[in-house]
Length: 149
Length: 413
Ligand SMILES: Cc1ncc(COP(=O)(O)O)c(C=O)c1O
Image 1 (cartoon, chains in turn yellow, red):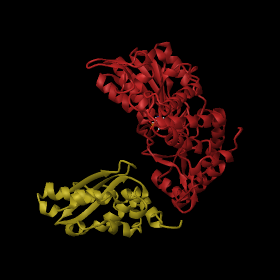
Image 2 (tube, chains in turn blue, red):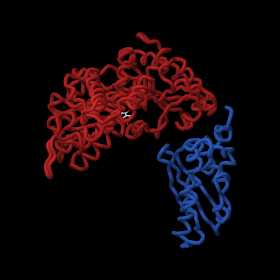
Image 3 (tube, chains in turn brown, red):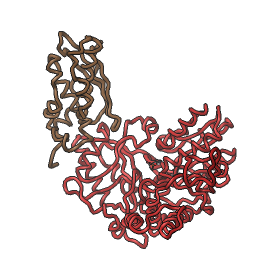
């Protein structure tokens, strides 16, 4: 296929063998999200230790783009400080898979790619607001999530 | 095709079929169950109306208004003939199948369905033949029941009998052809069983009328609904047919202009049928466009269309079943299905399939097809669906198969 490739070896591989697939016992963050249009649906679970992501797992049903991007996101996030995690942007995820072009070429499929990042931002927001009662650290995450796509 | 028109001539009438999509690929349009493309005759008719005849109907006395009214009303007569309906006042113009069914649920339903009554639908209905009945039965304290679908994609009619035996069923409502499985419903049998116990029937003809001959003088149903846009006509026009004895008992759906005889401060009398059910300025231009669509279908002949689709579907089923990792849904017997084929690849999401084959210009639908109850029954989140019409060719099916093989290869199935 010419042009902007989507179905690269890496995407197919991730969709068949996702990273960090599964569940965590007693997670600190548990966030569900879905795309009504295509039915992609994921559950992210995160364990926080000393303001770091000590573990992250996901479960869900989705297309290969959704599963591959979620896999990459969990790899990016694992072990990182929450302050860094908060700064993760669209292209950090898309870039890993060569999918930056989706922003331009596919307003439909970009939603599949960014579903997990949206869930992550919501999840961390709720964690700071509800668990830590720390509005300052929660910052703009909710707006960022809402406006992601 | 055994018709006055060759497939080549037909294709030339559809401007959109000449266009290129994506990377300079000729469009292969296989989403006809969703909406069909429009021939130039339909596009011209709408254009001509706006250019030369545009006026509101049924009111003014000047020349334009008379012409517009005549063109609009001639369409009603044409549709009556097309469906072999003797009384043209039984034909009501609506926005589409969805509005037709909602009209019945709102008007007839609220007058006739009471606490404890049962409405029976089926597991392979479009949301438009489920949700209006959920709204009605919840409001009236009635119950909604489903005729199940067997593993061959056909309705389990024994279940209908057990509902009818309760003596509480007010209406049985079902589509004449499933928009997902392509199953052609055993309509005569259902109506026969309902009539025996005096139960009314509604047929959703959205998928059947465009693809096979429908004769309403032979079908003994009470309500029949379909949309113009799936049969070469424009969007925003559809038909509700109601048997006159039933229509005469029904209260209006929308109130407003055109549906009245006399309006006083606190009382109104209704206009004659069918105008009582056509409040407000209707979609005049598109009704006139619909007329051109029916002319076009008549020119080809509905039996020829059905035969053409049988041939395409046979060809497609045979080739598709050889693609690695594919599952095809619906009846195996070609006599029991229309030109709709739903399929899935093992472990590949339908949206991935649709995106990959879209690169080759092949347009198929992916998703739940507004039939989530059926998706649950099939135990899938979504399917891919290819659906055919008069202008589709075997070469286009070959293009589909080529693209599907790419999917299998890419995902190493
Ligand atoms: C079987 C069936 N019923 C109803 C509808 C709804 O038709 P419309 O959207 O034109 O109202 C459709 C089309 O999507 C259909 O396939």
